[in-house]
Image 1 (spheres, rainbow, N blue to C red):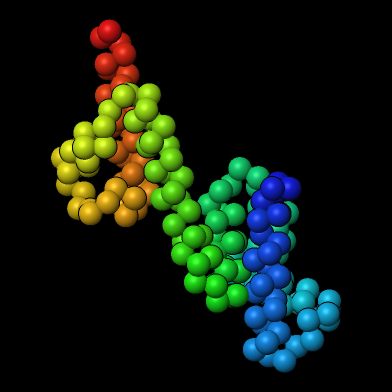
Image 2 (cartoon, rainbow, N blue to C red):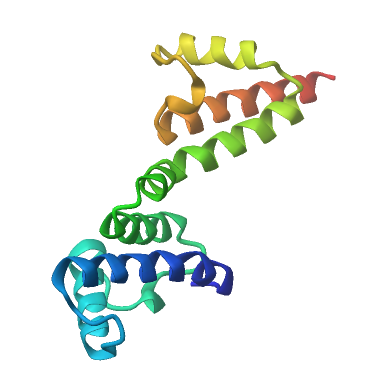
Length: 148
């Protein structure tokens, strides 16, 4: 993980540890118990033994790691944030492509409807659908750019 990712992850890990201690009566300062709990949480929930196994560019694994510890802490706000991370990134990419292609939200929503995606708001769609829409907008932009 990168230093930036560690700065994001460490508060989630600390909050999850505090929640665990409150539930089980474990002393927060017990580093041996904390390490045992931490390793077990990593292995059973994420399938890794150390955060060193998370490649800096593997956003999906980082999201899974953060969601795991947000869930262990019981923080609804963080759980919601990390459970929608892939969709937020996909929406950001789509918005960037929309700017390049100079297309409106209504145009993009039309593309989504033509793809038979059912939605109230684009950001409610799964990341895979948003990325498919992004590909369609990108192709439109490239065609438009080529013809100009």
